[in-house]
Length: 621
Picture 1 (cartoon, rainbow, N blue to C red):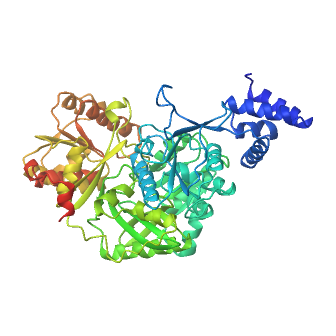
Picture 2: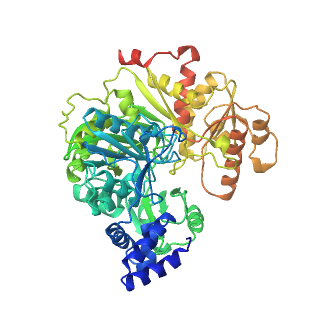
Picture 3: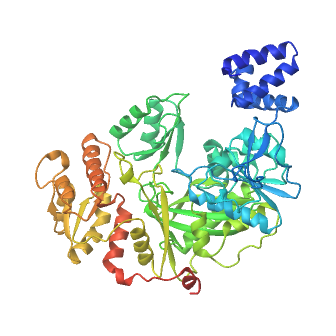
């Protein structure tokens, strides 16, 4: 029968108080069939104390009473023939398993879950590579994932596929049934990584880096302490619980700062603020700052180059690595950044420093398997932003471009196989360049502000190869929907640093015969630097010639709009320009570094210069 979770708690408590195991067993079984989790039952039985510990107690009691899910095969043959597929699920609506547990040596791989902003096809590729490598090493492969769009849920990828949610309770039910030799968490992105500590507490056979070390990397306080212990620089930061403390910290480090509130903004997780007005506006949006809702405030390093290192380690020793470089300066989420591999503007001395830091971190965390470190570099100083003890979004990109499959090597390490250390440098020795460009869906999101910030908004990506960095960049930008402008470019340059960064690129546009339009501040800056441009008024000025009129009449081929600050006038005007450009089908760039690189690429290369080569032709170079 159906009952509320409150009634369930009352009945279970009464049954246990009277020692009625039969009643308790029935109620637990009925509760599980009704879809209640062990955590929900624990809260009702034991209160809101240590929910994780209570959940384990309920789980242990449920198992002792024999209240266990059964494993069923998804019937892909419409009951016309006996189903023999490897599509499996668990349910309490059954009395027997459709098959026995896997008796051969087996490995469980946790997938990446559904495709969404922040977790997409990159992690699915990593999971599939892990499954295929484990199969090559002689293991039966068991995959847990729940998105029919992923490659990993194809029928012929793994020996067994559990089409199930990636929750602690469900994963443990499957592990209890299958009794695998090990579980791989590090190829599915953040969801499996978040389960590490709880799975280890439940004695799951986790392969690779320990859950304790994963927690030390994920927990900002622990990670910062370890970086200090190792003598590794990082941007200064504090977790603050009052406005007074926040203002004091900002006075210490100066603007801009990166602010990341806890629990309150749901998606807009971080923001860069540049002045007291922006700080006040952002904190108003956060609603409250207190011990219950702390805010992490970090020093934001302006005009810092962002560099990523993807690597594989075996018991703390790095056996293989790849270094990639962001086109944009730091301040754009790594998932939204345009990326070069091999790096194009990173000094050999910088690479040496990155490797030394990575080796220290790998040894301290005793890493076995994949990991990723994000660095800031400015004026020769290297700072670490974060370290992920798992595969990253850039793993497929660098693996494919270099021909060095990092996930295959990482999986071999996880399975206990000796992987020889790379002796050759894989940083600069490729005769071609790969560029990964993000794909956005702003045209399908009416009203969304199409601007890149520190929170991720891209919904896909394209990787392209070229003989030069300019060719690869232009191919990738064209592939994600940009077009080479025919005659006109609008530039709204934002802060003075962005205007200066765009100056040489704008001069190049003028030399190529482009008509330059500019908003007031940028028009004035160009005039002072002898760059001809035509003034267009802001949307709110209600004067002609107006930016919105020119966009709607298709008089502009490309818009470069760099956000300046969060004042109301700037927010409104910039937003209306960006949104109108997207709605009018006009190309839009909101990052000065990327705009400069794109302009240089299409001003030096024409469509006829873009070579069409197969992947094999590049590999043969």
